[in-house]
Picture 1: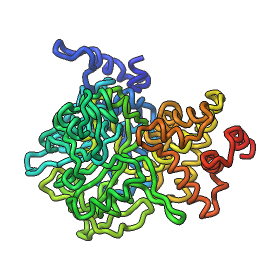
Picture 2: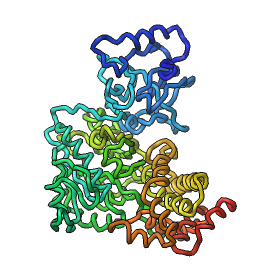
Picture 3: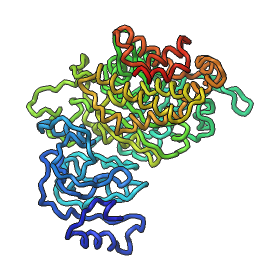
Picture 4: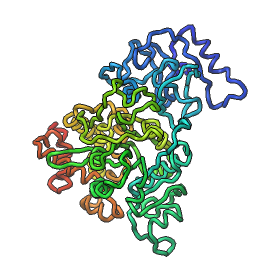
Length: 550
């Protein structure tokens, strides 16, 4: 069984493997197995990822991957670390991938660096190969706990600001504040959180919400009962909260983001970078834009996206889950400290422009992050967001992560309608399947240049988020409640959400308007049907007809 989990087939090397596994010394942690060496380093490796063409030790923990035979060499683009590899190895001629298998690595030949150190994961036993004397290039980890080493040559530290303080905003602020406190070599300890000032009643006394957060260390209105880190500082001034921040985390309803960007413009560092935790898109009749790119265009910075199978209250209570962060490091931010010998990754001295989700050169010339900061890339962001209860996967597919997070809210509302009507789990599963097909079709039709459909199948931001949203999240819960009570979902939103909004409602209306304007609404029958139910033009009983017609 152990050999099967490790991925070794029958061979003469099995006794050696068994000896290695069961020969731990008295000082070895009994919960962990010792590392073992690659036994067949002479076998051929592919030129980019150096993946074994035989079974070997997995780079990732057992719970994340199973080693498997690989009869043919695989290209680097098939690995989930392709984006990091490609950025740091721009001269490699990498080919377009079929669906990506789990990468298997020979430690000493892996150009992305060592596997996570033994004991870096709190869930499963990682198998890693021993260090050698060869200096390896930039390291990437996908384990549950983050660990990184930053050179003492960086004189400045990244300052983090969170914009938004609802239940999800406060939850994200909590986990990043814990990380900044644990990594003083990379981040300033205090995290500023902008809070829309409100009056709340605590212990019979009416007080400002910011005062309650900073003294009681709880967001009693939106995340009651959760203790917040003392280094998380609530600030009612948006401009003051983002002052000197190099990392901006956006976490508020997407209908408010335009006004927030207008207030921020000219009041942030020109080289700051953003992460959008907003699951939505900005849509007009003639244009659809990812929230992260809208933020970047308005503020003239680069902004990535975070999305996944995440429920705020569960994460706030430190129940384990995973998420996906899409961040395509701008060429101007790649320098020697990132493991790249060229100033911006092109190798010929010419300035390399950053491209957007449609493959076009962005209009704004980004200001590079100064080199006296730690390089703001996948590793730093992984360190910032990763917690023992919050596993982070880094990718570069901003389109897949953003659209998956936005459009699944429409599907979640449909699933709530189905369950509220009394149909069973199999009916809800049919709606989820149809919804995922329409999300992928939408991405391929409007973002054909950069979408990687594998993101929606493999990452937490895809199917994982879909399943959670359609079985446990609030778009599903309140649409189900509306059908059960015989009222509109808008009425439920008004009476149950304490002033917050259901993103599925606004996303459904905007996306349907966009599709109608382009004359393609009939190609997306589920999206069309949900919009019709929201407007009262279609009955929930009509949902099965969708599948008979298509």
